[in-house]
Image 1 (cartoon, rainbow, N blue to C red):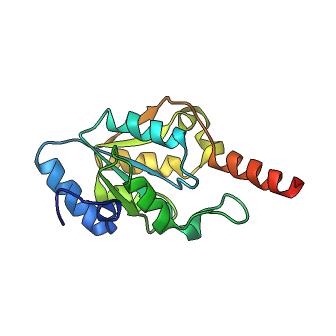
Image 2: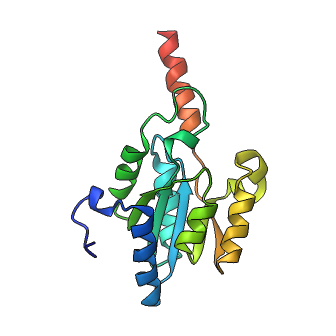
Length: 172
């Protein structure tokens, strides 16, 4: 594993490789932030979320929900997990990306042990409606000695964009 990735695909690691990289980063006294989610139909809200996350840590890692656990409606995700991971890895603000193996980030948090777990502001007040799995993720963060930070960027929605596109396609 090179410390200087040359392309987006070089920044996509297996979870075990990501955990090893994070341990090395933390051994060098650097703070690691973890963002986790579906990230289907990447948009400016995702980018702003990642930028805000990177601002509170030395290194930003992102884990992507595997296709089989994306429950956003029919024909979702639009892009397979491998492509979503590669696209996120192509963003300069993101240091490493991995595809999660589980339904939530709980096990991943236990494996990676991030210093900071980053979620969007919608989780601060509406986690039950957005994704009830967040409560178990928050507990996992506390168990590994991390903290949760909520970003306060413009909230956009891949699902709303997808529904607008599908609706527009049916009208023509």
